[in-house]
Image 1: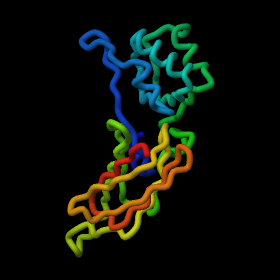
Image 2: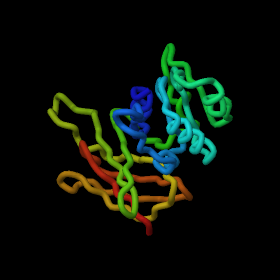
Image 3: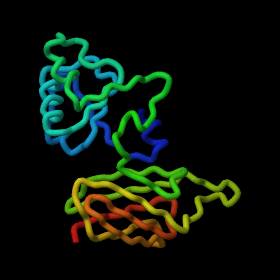
Length: 200
């Protein structure tokens, strides 16, 4: 699952369900509602609080993707409302997982998209988009600056201002917003950079 998302240059977070005894359940519906899709990879054992949480986020419109087993420790009548919900999608883990099986639509499109990873973090007043490149040039013994990079990014709210940050401060950027879609155009992208999106 992680390989499929990384290969498609899709950002993701990892949250853990505790087993409920040594560590109590701490996640709330607001923790999961911020995601359009929640992927449950082989969550064979669930606590009653986790079942309630999954029902709540389904009702709120979050899509659940189930890989492998889910809640096999629970009776069918407890898990049935989740498994039968139209917002639940089951994915076979063999022979391989494709990103189209996991996401209804990608959150990010990157051009050019080779050898790059992106992560988006909420920050006070906006979103920080972290970009790291993996196209190391062995002959030059470095990752040369990329002349142009375009990132199309869907976010849950609209941002209208951009600032870019990179080692040496060589990277520059511009932002176009159309509803919840944001087009970030970067120039002279080094090995690593951060784009800060803020409200206008």
